[in-house]
Length: 195
Image (cartoon, rainbow, N blue to C red; front, side, top):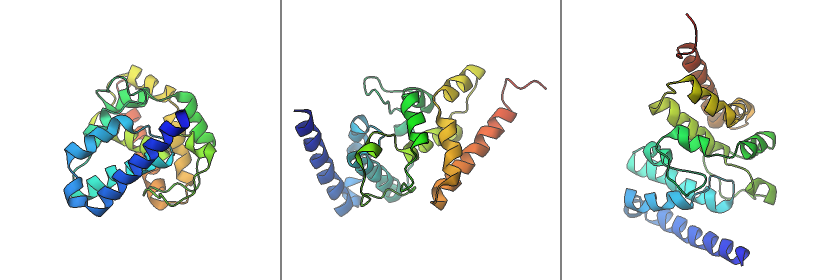
């Protein structure tokens, strides 16, 4: 039963992706994209990569960032988050660590649906999405307290950020490096550094 439910979800998402690709000017409306957020799990499963591709298409087509939408994403899908930090805190730290250990070398910054994804990769978070969530924190919501830093570090996302520097994809390396720079600058001027 679970397999047929998963198959139905995949077929529906493929149809939606095709529709968005064929008619981007009509389909790329916030009212069309926003309902996809609760069904996006942030993994490397093909259906999640298709949804992320739709999000990227929306940003290209409308020239509007989806930072505010990503800020409300939650891994549990039960309660919408109110900030990117909350969204990152909703991640499973063990799964983030496993994603770091088994970093998918094939993953590029731009969504590549044609890549054959093995069963093991489907069980990992999408590192691109996690880095985009972390970028949301630095672009709009700086961490105000030392407790915020502790919560961020508990998620293991900083280790993933360090690992992206060795990616073969230039854009992914650049994003990882800019996030590490943002981390360093935030620590340097943070409220917990004694002067």
